[in-house]
Image (tube, rainbow, N blue to C red):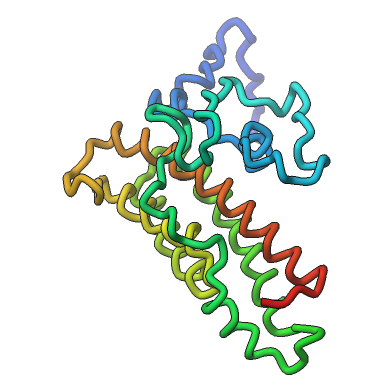
Length: 226
């Protein structure tokens, strides 16, 4: 019969390793992204939103750092330089939902009252966006710009199919930013510069998407027409 060796006394065992030592410094210092609810609670666009959307988040949900206030009488996507939102002035002419493209989707419905095909397609898109946003938050925390670029490219296509022009344009910018490319200035960026721009792009994307989702839900739930 084998002889069992008793375990060494506690004093002889190796001390526990500090968990923080296993986490790379870059990940420990990576900034956190806010949720759509937190972003919308700080947005002046909420003036015309239902009261329940404008409720302040609980203290536990509030972001650690309060966002700078955008300039008065200006849309969030035109916020002042250095704010936490991305300036999207070149998209002023774009509609939240491009009705010509969206109308082509509606033409595929057998019953214009039920709109079963188009409604299923739109609500599948909502689910897709929720998953993609979670992936983007993870990639951002890991400072994985290449994966952020890939997710931006993926979401750009599905947004374009529904005619969500503003969302599509922001996804395109995320795609370029993830490749460390400033398309506006036609120059390359460092990883640090790209991460700073990416933070603003993701926050602005979540806000623009939330507005597009509101428009689409209102269209189907209240049986709107173009």
